[in-house]
Length: 461
Image (cartoon, rainbow, N blue to C red; front, side):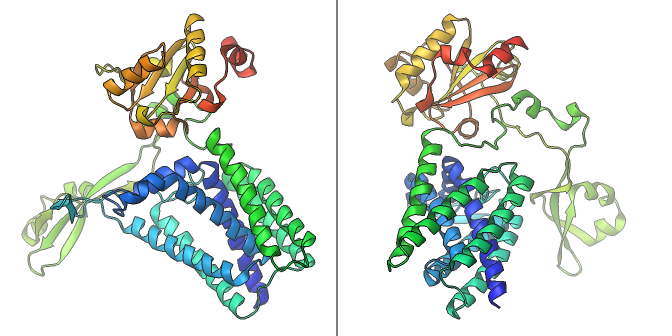
């Protein structure tokens, strides 16, 4: 039994560390996902929305901390209880996500008035961020498996089979955990940093334990050490940019190429159908017919005599998988509605995009450096555009207040937040390719950009 419990600890601890680390790498993106859940048409918890980033940070650190504690056997009873509570909540949440019906009509009270509306279904839980997109049912299945493993740990802990590791146990469990994380990282993430981070975190915790082996509070000091490591990493990725970008706007990706349809690439597109519902006039039972099947049977006498329509507004389902462009919603316009998308993704010269998805909440700490960079870029003949989702009055006031020498274009706020995790952020494009991105805290000078290898190589192409 103890061997089974140990295997469960390795699996759960390793997965919690990786899951927490991936989300911590992009805590802003995770906070956007939490905002989706908190919205009035989802869980209807708008009072949590202002604290989405803080909650995202806490959840990320908690996952990593519990993963380390599970591996090392630290505070075993408390850890097993917290693991159980967390997985029960996540299992409920992913089940809610998987069973959400966007066509369902629900009655809610808005400003004291009852209204009927459809829920906003969260399409992905964000368990592994953009690194491993999971469907709602895949996420739920993953959590059910974790629930079983955590139940084994829970029972093992309260029957005396889990205690703070001895030195020999540390070596074996840490070795297997690092091996498991290495395989997972290479196979699914193409990113070995989780192995390095885990080795540092576990090594630090074990060092604290050995130095304070006679101290009865050593496990709390181990926890503090892990929180500090996580906090430093978390601060870095928020104050700069994620260390690894899995979004379609990552450096090196070509926006234009990722917008091409299956037909343009000579690939098979997905096949979709709408679920129609018909009622059997003899039995009263409902049957679902896919729209593409309906075209083959709607003239058949047996069908017309047996079934009558109930609804034509069922969900759209995928009948056959196929190629879907990674980018489907990139559209940038001028204030008067003129489309600028093609000009931006086909420009043969360097294009600087200053992305400020929300002017009202734009950080102005490095705005003078930003103004200097864009002025120098324009003087060198480069194109510079701002892009925002904010209204014209706000944008113009902001532009004049900070003496920004460029006009703002208009884009969808969600798309802009996906493009770069900074408000404002800087993106350098050429021929549709994302050459570099900078957080506003890292605003470079034009000379620094021109001296870099990526700029010189792009200029020679």
